[in-house]
Image 1 (tube, helix red, strand yellow):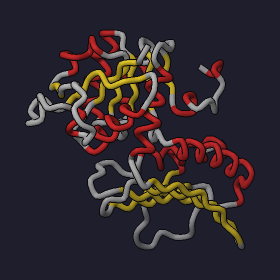
Image 2 (cartoon, rainbow, N blue to C red):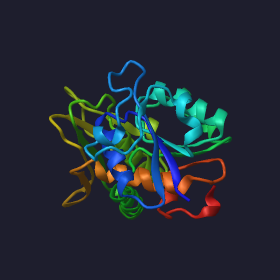
Image 3 (tube, one colour):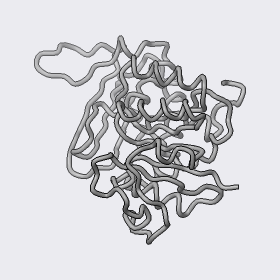
Length: 273
């Protein structure tokens, strides 16, 4: 039986690639496509918008119109829209995969509450390679310990609206947890002027926004005489789309909980939830 998936922002960059990824996946299919209610593309064929040819899925302007037709919603949008969508998923007992970033603590609390009622898979990055990097970062931080300075450099396209990226913050969180530090206390977001000598306990973030960069992340562990760098570079959003589709297939029918790609990839035991 195919898992029926709905996607938000079907006419956007990520939405079109998700449609393409779903067309190539086994055991899962596109059942609904959404755009903003005021979009001129309401009523268009989602497959045609993605350059895949007609697939019979017509773009709708409201999740309420199509929620009965789906098992899982994939949402890469903005925090306010995602929160509206997750409330509807809770009301109709539908799972949701969240790729939206930039939530504040209060908004994250609403997601945590929703995950007690429906299965939620939320990740700052759905790439398999990035999630492997999370494991490598944990190992590097534990081995190198407090003998290195740690800097995180990320670059994205000019249209990205949040900074640092959710992936960079997740990387910082992995490193901070491994070292027993609180990221909220030790993070330094950019530097300017006479900053003085670097505090070794801090974790620095640097952000680049330019052109059409899909996503580059480097975590630098720098000691006197040597440094270790763990880098991931995305050249296509398809890596994110395939991961999100994999998460949607995995989460269908799961018990309510807040999952992430570490769960989907089996990096974390089932009994951890």
